[in-house]
Amino acid sequence: MCGIIGYVGKSSPKEILIEGLKSLEYRGYDSAGVALKNDKEVQIIKSVGKISNLEEKMNKESLIDSNLGIAHTRWATHGKPTEENAHPHQIGNITLVHNGIIENADELRKQLMVEGIIFNSDTDTEVAAALINKYYESNPIEAINKAIKEINGSYALGVLFKDSDKLYTTRKDSPLIVGIGEEENFIASDIAAIINYTNKYILLEEGEIAEITKDSITVTKNNKEIKKEILTTNMEADAKDKCGYDHYMLKEIMEEPIVLEKTFKPYLDNLNLLPDLTKYEEIHIVACGSAMYAGLIGSSLLEEYANTKVDVEVASEYRYKNVIYNRKTLVILISQSGETADTIAAMRKAKENNIDTLAIVNVKTSTIARESDQQIFIEAGPEIAVATTKAYILQAGILSLLAYKTAKDKKLVNDDKVVEEAKMLPRLLKEVLDRREDYLKIAKEIYNKEDMFFIGRKIDYAISMEGSLKLKEVSYIHSEAYQAGELKHGTISLIEEGLPVFAIITDEAIKDKTISNIEEVKSRGAKTIVVSNEEYEEQTLQITVPKISPFFQSILIVPTLQLIAYEVAKLRNCDIDKPKNLAKSVTVE
Ligand code: F6R
Image (cartoon, rainbow, N blue to C red):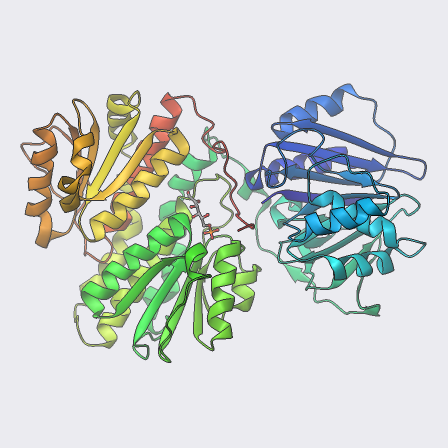
């Protein structure tokens, strides 16, 4: 969490830093700050709340002339979102911004206080500033080197030294790139923050420190210079535009058919480009949040059609539990960002146990993409809305294809029609998305309620989990997903007059059972909304999508729930792209 940008170059940094922060706002948005530096002074401006508050404040102040600056948008971990706790932090000669968590901050703070340091905030970051300051005599790199040897935890740092006109950076387990421009260079948590200026960058490895001027980037590790490969991203500058949509969430849902086609294309031309899962006796799918719910779609299909044993685990639990591995276990990590701290830890645990890892990931330069044994890249492009939509669809889509391929490899299905149907999926999905009026109609029926349920069985329960999460995170309506048959074991006592219950029915074999459960809640007053691939005459509120192979049915159903969540949040005037308390890339545990 938290986003960092830094600039040194031919221009004045204000616009570059503010625009960069806006691109990084998805990483946290409870407070923000900048530091501008020239050879006489460092000017720090901070504000609580969104970047727009900081921008307003900067517009009112007289800013120093400068060609060097750092900026930060915060998602609070240590200390409340106040101006005192907002970055940049300054101690002695050092001004810095930090993303990550310094795990031994309390211990270091106590030692430094004994040495006479006075801290002004509750943050762990100030400890990093104090440590670098302590070791700074005249050599910035030496000071950073000594300080990071004492820091445990994760960090990406952007550092200014009072008597230097250079920008310094280092990282461990937190994302950060060094962007290469013409007569200007950058640091950023994500290339999206600087894509208007450059598509060239380098990645720092643990222990590497970059010293950056407008014309040079020198990377050293333990005082030895390291030659770095220059990488290029093909991200388009306009990928960050809303393209006329009111919100990124809507834009990203509407992009689903295009990104699905792009992601599927190579595999539909040649399924064998997908990994062979038949050599494994069991699979662990490990991820967080929506990515984990995409994993549930995969496990349901792998078990049902490919007769493959799959356990789906939340990464924050998996990393600490006693996992019993079999020599023929495969661990599949799913992550849009590739930087989710718990998923990274789960991947490293599997690797320490010599277990094969396969990552389904969007960001190609991310830690999970780089450290996993095998990767399948989804082609979502930048996903800016905090709530994932298109990336989830691609994660579920790839797992569905993998399940089909595995079933085929095991000779459990022999139906080439499935590939043909997968080719039709983007077109059918577009038709489903174009029916926005239908989703708005349902949203108007339910947006003023405060509780809801989503029910389903088997894969329809997995779909319910994602539908429920999407609704609660963007609209702040309390919602729960339940296995349809389980309600009567206690939870049904919560059903009351007018309470909305979404019932998902796509699994042919079990649909009659779910319909009985719908009747049970209806007879207790629930307002049911049936989301299915066939129409039910006796149901009043329903969404019906085209029927397709069971491997891909979820890909047509979930987007309807995403759009309903979007419309409900809009009717409730919620901050759809940046829901409260959340951040997109969860790089802390
Ligand atoms: C929900 C959402 C989160 C993420 C989760 C994992 O809309 O976006 O639940 O799915 O934080 O993130 P990644 O996929 O980046 O590992």
